[in-house]
Amino acid sequence: MLSRVKLSSHFPVFAKFISTSLPIHGSHRGGRHWGKENSLETYRRAVYEAQTEILEIDIWKTNDEHLVLNHDGIINGLYINQNTLQKLQQIDSQLITLDQALNEFISIPSLVFFFDMKDINAIPLTMKTIEKYQIENRVIFGAIDRLINKEVQKQKPSSIPICADTETMLKIFQAYKQGQLNENYPFEHDILGLFLESHTRSILTQHLIDTIHKTGKPLAIVGSLLDDPKIQKEMIELGVDILFTDRPDILRQTLNSYTK
Image (tube, rainbow, N blue to C red; front, side):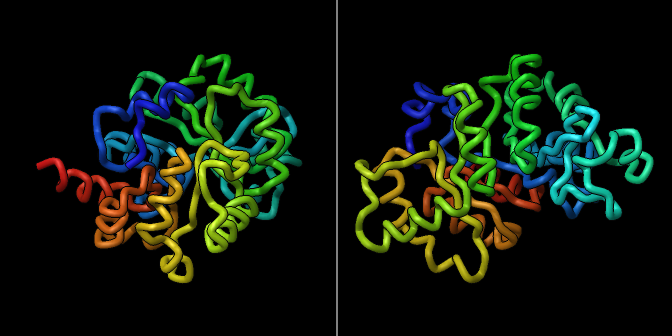
């Protein structure tokens, strides 16, 4: 496990996790098994039942300047960025805004928000929202699309860490295979990430994680395999830093078994 004390000197958000050496508990879109993902219902259960430490949410902007939480950017055939909030909520009553989510959970100071940026046009308003709520020390950024990711990097405060995009991670894994991944590697990001699926599981070895940690970077993983408590335990033993799961309830049980 990478030292969070050292990480927190650059990124204050990690100071919230210094008291434990276990992986940080992240809820992917709240937890889809509870109901509609990216909704208040799933977020509430992730926070209040599973005691999650990071809420992962997907952000888009409507054409009337509202930030809404949705993964695909399309609701019943309507593109979010081409429609108003009112019209979209008439179709999807569970569609919520970023303001609604923050107002719901802002009073829980230990809770961190992982903003997965899906819409490049949502970035400026997201930065203003972070400033409005004064949550610079409670945010981690991510964007799997490289162009969006690079734009986030340009606009975000330096104190907010950002996770690598998919294209960058593929290059990093290639560098690892070639023995070129070390502290001198020209990293662009603060956190590295991996989608843990059946076809990528073989990549995630102790040697890879140790190599990543030697470069001073934490590793976050997400994927359907993380719904399995056996896989969760394997990731804990390997020393993965952040686990994002669609089953926050199971991950909480798994992590609690290490503290008894």
